[in-house]
Length: 65
Image 1 (cartoon, helix red, strand yellow):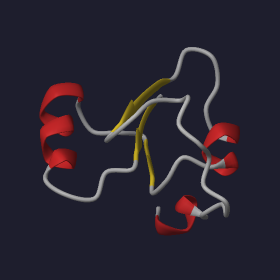
Image 2 (cartoon, one colour; image 1 turned 45 degrees about the horizontal axis):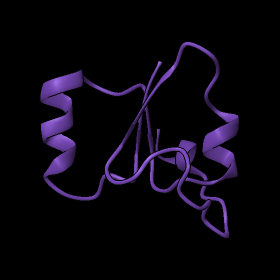
Image 3 (cartoon, rainbow, N blue to C red; image 1 turned 90 degrees about the vertical axis):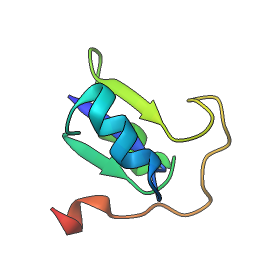
Image 4 (cartoon, rainbow, N blue to C red; image 1 turned 135 degrees about the vertical axis):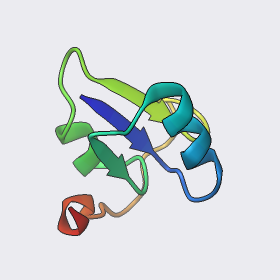
């Protein structure tokens, strides 16, 4: 599965051109995002990487799909 994390502007369209349509789009790096990916999934971050601090509150990204 392909996950995009933190995309909010034209970088989303650029990432789609390079990596293809994501299976999941996460607004922020939080505990809910961590729970939704498994080994073999690919995470694409708009900025930073998996070592950036987690958001204080989780966001229900799945409510928009």
